Length: 473
Ligand code: BYC
Ligand code: FE
Ligand code: FE
Image (tube, rainbow, N blue to C red):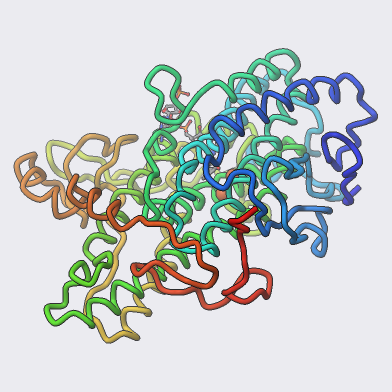
């Protein structure tokens, strides 16, 4: 089952040809997908040859095949990880019982909602990033952008397959609607906030792949623990691709930070901007903005939805099956700081309603590891500046802390203090204009824009000077 049939119109490892109705429905969706890709997918170098990896099988050796591909000819397909033998429901009231291969009627709406929300983020990110190749700091980075884009589009296919195969007419309607919503469009926006934010400079792109794709990692990992086995298998394969997106984000920021540090040291006044770079304070503001937007993606701290999803086995905790003994989580509690009259009061709440917060905790710890690595770079350069993550209460729009004022350390503050400091904490219009002024394309093989350090090594063992994007054809 692991190998993928590329002779079919839609490459797949789900034996699509044995279900003609399903195959026809997906073949009908395919040209609409391609129209969507052409109109709001990558708009620059969009038909050039790019050195991309394509999955040819889902086992360890086969999913990373590299070669030149023109993006509209990329073979987007439907790949599920192999079935795990005798897999049981990892979490919730039915933990330990056999997993489902079909959708139980009582969980149909909730499952459809989760799959649609997951699906919606994938095309949204492609739309957000569609102009970035115009200002790529190197061909290496440009190629990574396109790799991320084609794979996010494949993730859309993964979710659309589930909608078509398991949710009948409603599922087909939802699949059509996924191509109709648009990131940032006030009339038909994407579902989650972060996916309607502009992503028009490369510092943002690296923050997005660092923080937003990392939400993807945790949400996919939580869905990989689902009782609905086809969802679990889809997400497991998506996670193998996701690792590269996170690599692009973490190392991209590391390279911008390294260069900021080098230019700070080079300048007689320690001013990286005077040397044509991005300064560390500005990078910190971008981190503040994107980290807090991405914390919102986990939903409210106290959430009956989250409790219902867990109880039903639709979502599990991060590595639920491997890491926990008590998969019921009926009696445990979690302490959460509630804002009350300008103060914070700790309260214990049942763990099940705190499941969004449990996942957010895992996410924050993972982000902190990357920050520690960036700070080692600053230490190596002998600089005192350190990047930090703002507190989880800072600048939130969802949940308990939404629209209240907290400083980056998480202390409650009044509106006047917020107003007096916000320009030091979050990007200003001037910061945006400055960063955008640096965004000039560098298309010569092996060369880098001045504001970013070279990566340590190329892709798939290739040299840095390799022509990752053929700009002349
Ligand atoms: N923006 O109980 P609550 C990825 C809504 S990223 C706007 O707090 P719940 C990727 C919520 O929908 C991973 N609305 O939340 C990354 C609900 O609305 P309804 C994406 C928000 O349901 C980069 C209401 O507020 N995958 O893959 O416990 C590139 C109250 O809900 C937001 C998933 O998210 C927000 N930030 O949790 C490409 C997995 N937050 O239903 C791809 C599927 C909450 O009352 N999604 N709301 O109208 C879920 O599991 C859950 O829906 C959420 C929210 C975790 C998102
Ligand atoms: Fe994705
Ligand atoms: Fe991703």
